[in-house]
Image (cartoon, rainbow, N blue to C red; front, side):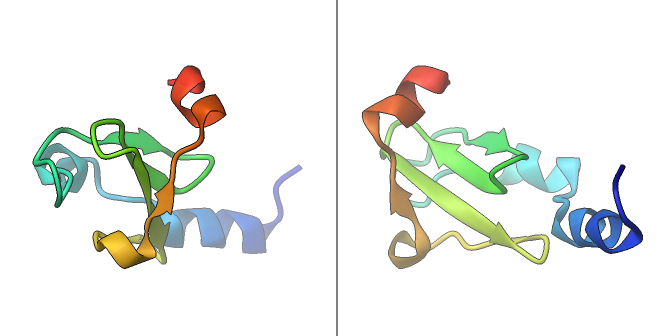
Length: 75
């Protein structure tokens, strides 16, 4: 069962689908994959995952984490 706090956190972290259609990787200018459970935007071309905090994608290289081989196999 999902608590009210968890539900509010999910809503605050949700990204507007219209925004997702517009965003591209800042390094490669390619499409991003939205990983909702991880709250990340994935750039396969750059091999990076950009975090989403409080519903705001952090689209800078310093905030991103490098994708592992396992990450790439999942997608």
